[in-house]
Image (cartoon, rainbow, N blue to C red; front, side):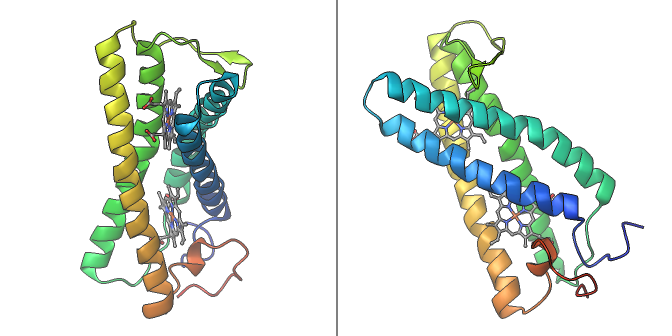
Amino acid sequence: MHGANPGRWAASVVGFHWLMAVLIVVVMTLGWVAEEYPSSPDKVTLFVWHKSFGLTVLLLLFFRLLNRWNKGAPRHELQGWERVLSRTVQGALYLCMLAMPLSGWIINSAADFPLNVFWLIPLPPLTGASESLAELAEEVHVTILWIMVSLLVLHIAGALRHHFIGKNQVLRSMLPGAKPGTGQ
Ligand code: HEM
Ligand code: HEM
């Protein structure tokens, strides 16, 4: 039902996966660098990039989910526990991709900062100004960040395990340009 080759993810799913993986690593790096940067106009600029790319993740997530529902998933031959674990980790990563930008937007709103995406698009605050809410949202942002990093370690370890130990098609099914017909 989902395309000619059920052993592979649709090209658009692969495209979203790697585009967003790169973007998320960039957003995290900008967040860490901006956080450590001494107070200066450059620090503010780094945060504008951080927030703008972070909100791009939120926008892309919407289209990615629509596309993902549309295209479906390939059927891999996995053990029951592998299926449950990989689906749980993938679902939790989706929740993190939603919760990170939203909690960031709430920090910004509660801290009463203006939000100008790429210096072009002004976005309204999601909440009123509140110092305690800003602090709470910061804690949430950083807690979910570490949950997301841990999930990514599991996710990447799983992908490498499938490839090098299980010697199956799981990693190949998500790589761009793999030949059709190589699915199981
Ligand atoms: C995929 C989305 C996002 C990721 C992965 C992410 C990640 C991060 C990281 C790694 C930090 C540094 C944390 C630290 O070292 O304490 C950070 C801080 C921050 N982020 Fe994000 N972020 C995202 C989206 C956003 C968005 C959309 C906004 C605002 C609109 C935002 C606002 C902030 C703010 C204000 C801080 C500083 C918090 C503090 O002072 O502790 N983030 N984020
Ligand atoms: C920020 C980084 C990443 C995120 C948020 C992420 C998230 C996801 C999600 C949500 C899926 C489910 C398919 C979909 O709906 O698109 C998926 C599948 C997959 N990811 Fe990632 N991923 C990331 C990085 C990576 C990396 C670095 C690798 C490789 C080492 C990788 C390997 C895979 C593989 C092989 C699949 C297919 C798994 C299967 O068929 O069940 N991912 N990823």
